[in-house]
Length: 342
Image (tube, rainbow, N blue to C red; front, side, top):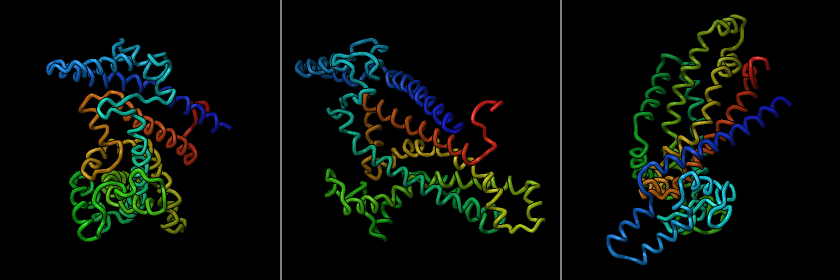
């Protein structure tokens, strides 16, 4: 019962935080002077294209860009009526992309689930690599195993993702016949889901998963190793060994459980960090994720598209943080639900 109350409390907190984030995103998006349409109007007037100016002015009125910023925000969120009534984020209307001349939802529809799929695969890769290597490096501290794991970790941290992408781009295709670019074969783009399409997506995901997950796995491995070494130096470890407990059983039962909390806590920032950090990788590998759209929207000041992508990343952050908080409460009894008295 207490856990359910805590989960409801965290959910409400997440919604309030998301509302504050929406305000910050809207302010940041509108900090640079002008916007896509005002820049376009200036260019059209300079070249004497009166028809284009009239269309741009119509779009400014249609999407309430001619109103004060505070009113634009409430219309964008869907908390105030605009030219077409209540039609904002709360109603499922994400706005219009002036750069691509299409509704935002039609642009990011397929890109959203592909983004989540690629980055969930990268998170799984991070945990599958970092957990065994971190534990092994701590258990075999100051041996060749530890030094090798450390070298691999620092190499992963030091190598830029886009450079690693280019290297795997070339050698993966040359020696392993891995597909070049994209997240599926061109023949499957726009087609309904099928088993051949799923297989194509899985094969295309090998290189992006490795590239996006490498730096995260290296950082988490080093952190887990440090936490494990700290736990292994505590008196309860010597007591357990002195009582005859096998080192492998002792390692899994006590130090690993205590050092595992940061692993769980990292869920909150790992996924959104990978989404934002994979923008260049997406451009280099030609991935159909939201990364290239975000880059194009920021360059052209396409505010509705940029704002939606940033809100999506913020939502991932908040959901990940809530999940990690709930898992920490379940995994570690030392963590309390509320204040000092609970």
